Length: 200
Image 1 (spheres, rainbow, N blue to C red):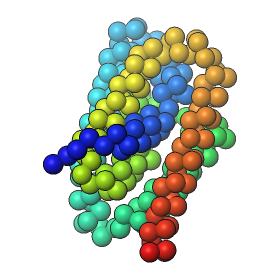
Image 2: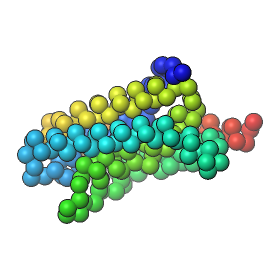
Image 3: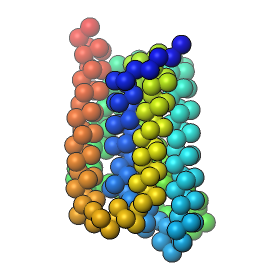
Image 4: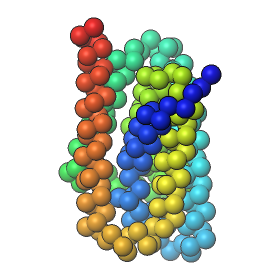
């Protein structure tokens, strides 16, 4: 039976929200939906958020099964996942995150908005790590995911206002601050894995 673990819920919320980088990606949403009216843009944002949330929730429940099938230990996943998150965080801090590539005819709600901007490999790995570390906290992880995606959805819905309010420099600052938090989280995850794998 699942129990509500506030610590796991909070960690999940922060990790998913930071990786989604809603403030930093608000200008990206505007760029991808340029020329669309507000209703069409909102429909794109709604679909992208729903798809990303569904992917993360499904992955949180089948993640342990995948680990068991591949015979990957939680400690190994922690180390690999922490390193992956650290690389993403360093890109955020250096302002070197790749710009999403769009192709004519592609459904931008699915890619690049839902995948990989909102539910990229870093987010999927983090969700799987949190569930692996707390196998009885599926409900807490699920609520954390949904909560983070609701806040992200709201910010994306207000993309025009957010972009106007914080400006390009503000978006860069937000991305760097979130990158710093993500780097700290990555170090914590990796160090826990190293301790388990080599020191116990």
